Image (cartoon, rainbow, N blue to C red; front, side, top):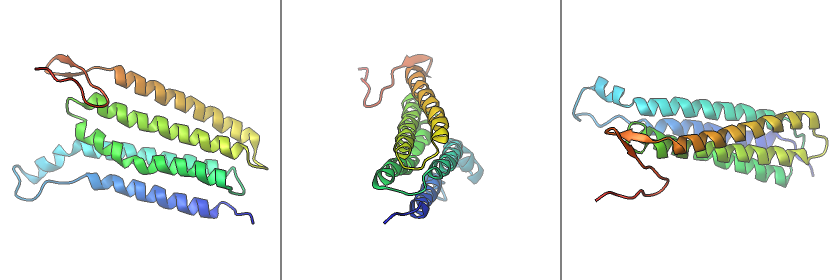
Length: 190
């Protein structure tokens, strides 16, 4: 029994919709009666607005790319479903690095937060490359379209890796001193 792409598209669309909705849940105003005015509280949330807008755009573009890739295949298979699952794993993870980025955008751990955020897109780009490689093995696929998409995804992967490495090596400053940041605990001065 063969199956078209309608179920995988519907399931994927649902996952994308949930992930994009989860982004807004990190934008929380302090409880009423807290110090300061409402306006000050709303303005203080700018890192969360920024991270939300950035990740909303990323998920939107990812959904469009996913739609274009899935259109290449006429019939799904277990390998395509598993590779698609890897892409969906990445998409569902995006709200977490978004929250980390927003929470640390103005603090001393900004380099670690941005590195973590960028590294998420390295994984996502890898997932899309796996999906396209899997689809390339399906019968009746337009191989010219696969080659074109594959070339673009490989370039994107390289850009994400480079961006992650550049950000990782970029020193953050606090109080005019160079601070060492790391993924994981950093040594403390005594």
